[in-house]
Image (cartoon, rainbow, N blue to C red; front, top):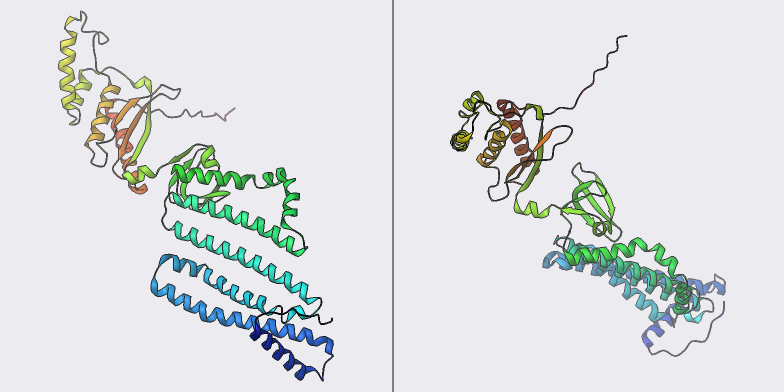
Length: 426
């Protein structure tokens, strides 16, 4: 290893300091060690000094930034400090000093000079990438606290910037390492565009989906959604570039591709939660063989039921007037008649209307659905005055407990699946 001629540089202070350190090393080790090792000792001394300087700067200014973040209580300052953005900036000071002393120390020795030039450039590339990553993480963290529709766009856009920064960072890293132009590497990669698109397919789709979700404001972190394609229902915990994390109600975490939030059917229940109402839509299936016209015995029982007593009296008057022209009034099928299922439907409507936990401003319907092999469904369609899960389930259970039990007073039979009992006896 031989000394090379140095160029003239303007920083006389660093030049004098380098000469002083070199002279001191020769005085200490010149008599006891081979002169070929003296350059290594000088390089090692400077690197150790720079590492110590960086450690001291981190302790002093890192602690100072910590006090500022704690006392100012400015959100972005606290997030930047938590994600070590300021500490990363301090590293630039050390590398800048390393770059300044390079001409006076490392460039003097053949072999070390080219290595240090590359080493400094590589350090800059790695540090810039680290700074970009930490700034993006801090911005995402700041935006996540807002829990609005921009959270999705910021997160996906930030992750896409990370990918592009990593991509170009790797290219410049390799170009610096092999002493070539980055454009030449990009030219070679241009021929591999199809492969790159295939590799980053999910990331590109996720990025586009994230922007669409952000602009359309359909889903945000914290929303309660259902994804029919995967039969998943839960609360959105995170939407990133590739996947979306959904916390199910059994506390498990499901992940779906982000682009499926756009490409497939997704139901957002957040509007329902914000309105503090929740829909009940469930049928009671009756055996049609239990349907019948109401005779006098049934009507006399119905008159005693408070919720439909006035309805029965009103209908009896209407039917009596309507059936005046009927010839064979003793035959119940002639003329208009009430049926037990029809009266029960009115009873169910009045019962729902009488409950304070059922919304009166939203739709309330008790309707017959198309008959099936199991029987005829009578669907209850209404909204509770609370969207709380526990309260909703209690209200729904109370309603169906009552209606199913009350149906017996109307001589109605609930359909049950047929059970075939096998006779094991020979």
